[in-house]
Length: 508
Image (cartoon, rainbow, N blue to C red):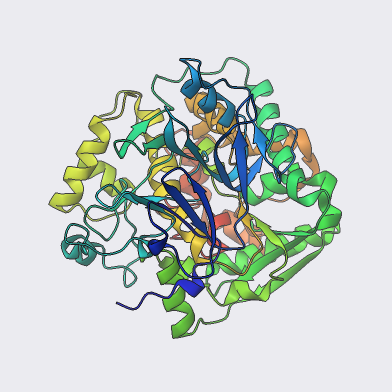
């Protein structure tokens, strides 16, 4: 197999020998560890209270004040304290953005992800290597290709992905969100969502806090420099727009004209919103990717995912490569996308049903892995479990690897990536989430005029024709026989249309 390390932009490897680090990459060392990283990936040092070195922070971490960290980070922790590990975790929970934290001390050797796992990591215990992609981990007798799994998922022919921390290789695992990797024993351990979530009693304050954190995360990039943001007929891009109100002068909005009914609707609604609110906006025409572009995209992701995002490899290159892109990933956590109308807190979720909801084949091996993942969950509330499915399996195993595929942007970050946002979204009342109230309430709080345009519905004369066609569905919703999200999707667990505009979702 030919390994082309030149295309692994903004990627990294943590290992014991420099022999595994691609030529011309930057190298940092700590004791027996070597960190190799592409020159475009930011890396800063983490310091303890006494200014001693305790690790590295990779990527784009955003602090509580909405500032992007560019210099060393000093944490208020004493390594002699028996609670040092938990203190480091708590400190990390205050950061948003897209990042990986590597702690290397005498007693603590761990790797942590951001809340969405958006700067993904795979690892091989046998070789003691952790890296951004499977292509950076050498093949060995124990880490050969898992052909049975590869053939069952059939990527890129089919729009599948590797769940449960699986990869196309034996003995090479993906670190899931909410878990850390212990570099002493090479085991993955859950550090967050270890207890049931308490439902919030103050929804208004919760929504305001979500919006405020999103606003801070947007400010970290858009306050002083131009960035891109997608705009569609959907909910998540509208929420980002609402929170970005103060920084519109530095944001260029765009919609990809995907050759589909949904793509046409996105362009129609987004262009009218842009005109009404005087946004800096353009429509980008879809362009077929070349075979070379498609192969390089797959190579960067370790052949772990494909789908529409893969097909958009050329289209997204129309954007200015010096600008970053703000994504709407994870807004769906507050909108119950994997729930069914008949679900209750105690609905039994079998391995086969879990695979059905995430739209992957129920092979014996995948059912075994699904059962293992479900059995290890300390959470039993089915609503929370389904939301964790979205965070850990969909965002961590599907969206995370995709970010490595696209290298034309200076950075790709979701302003929803923050531990507190995930906690609040999980704590929202079930009926509130079922009826898609988060989007309306957040927009009403930060930019209420945006609600004059419908979500995922035609405007103008086409709207009246659409209402006539879908009248029976409105009646079902009023009678609570149908969840609101089912009005727009044949399969209500499909991903949000805001992801689809970047080619990152399966639209039905």
